[in-house]
Image 1 (cartoon, rainbow, N blue to C red):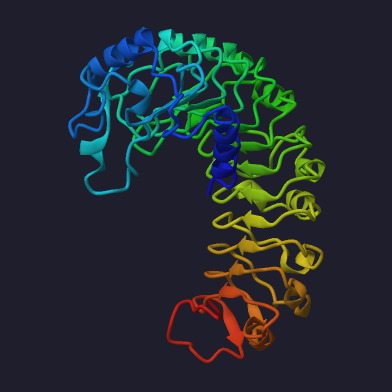
Image 2 (image 1 turned 90 degrees about the vertical axis):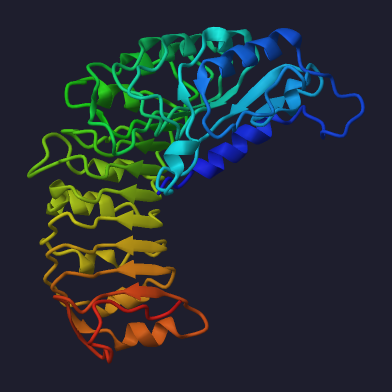
Length: 390
């Protein structure tokens, strides 16, 4: 779950459109000829099987009215390019994806601040280095578009970036990264997603991300990390899903406790979480509202340590080896709206939880499971998991 993606999208769009008037404004300026021609050149190098860009034509001279284009209504400059493809999970998604090459004509869009080419298929080509010359960009999303190869260091020239998403999908293997130094100049960056990039050889990744003063959301799933980031006191959301941490983690394993503003944590499929010191550090962050520590081979005691996590709204600890009795203090977490404890070895009486979930003051959805777990006060033992309350 990308917890703040839509939030940052709203902020960026609101900022960029602050000077824009509605489309029916009679004083709106038509698009600039050079930029219209640049967009037509850009289209010419794309393969568009389903004619998504059919409105981009020489007949329709006002490119500000083309699909996916947002202009400044005072100047006519193209400011935003929205070319996100379909959800890759859809059955016919591949036919709707844009393919081909990204033409350098984009450089003629001098006021371009928003570029979204995500969820398309650029067939394992490298990210064009010239994108680093679009120095007015605030938002850049190239995720899930089948780019492969070295990330061009020129992207470090985009000093105005606030949102930067390069996250890869499951179709390509991990892309190796040897250095993260190119990120150091992105001082305004608030959102960073490098899902699927192999950072095991990037010895500077911890220092670089720690020195990004504005960063509040960091996504590094499947990145083969060897350390937990710990110098990110302003971080609000952290995703380290499937980073292949195994066994004890070197360095400051309790580093979570320094992230005093942390609210969203995804660390599923990492064995390193099966550590008393790591869990203590994480559970000392009482600001957490969402936590996913599923499939982490957890066997160390954890349930009793949750009593102070009163801000929690959602918690997933399924698919572990938790062998404990459910403490009564668990019922005091009245802000919880979702709990998943399936496939563990937890014992105890859950009747008080079920009673609480049906009260008018608390509405909770429990997926507590009866496979492995041994509950008292649970009537429906024929199913593997039940929703106590919708």
